[in-house]
Length: 163
Image (tube, rainbow, N blue to C red; front, side, top):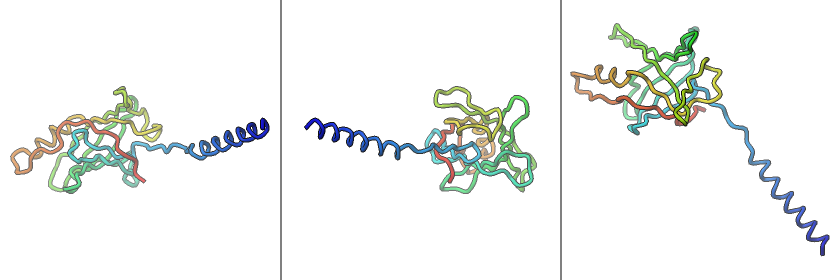
């Protein structure tokens, strides 16, 4: 009987360890240039990063949109040399002579600075992002029109990675 219980115990140990080996999957890295952030206010806005424009020095592009509207703002994403600040440069609209530049900074889940020194070398898209002065820009773009201010000053929360 001792032999059977020992053999049964060995069989149980082996069968328990096999599923744990198959469950271990490599984690997928999601760089900023493939990430999608949602607005922290839960209004349905998304900040979607994408591939850079061809034949440019930009690191990525970004679009802010809402499911019930067309794209609100389109940006190129650039990074300053040296310190590493990241900027969203609004693509000028046909009827606008000025394009706006917005500083974007990233934070980890503990709200510690997570802005990468070099875009494309980051290990993972940070949990949070803040786009400086975007809310006031949106307000002044809509002031005097029938369109109410939409975005406001929000924190952007990492939502998912693009396929």
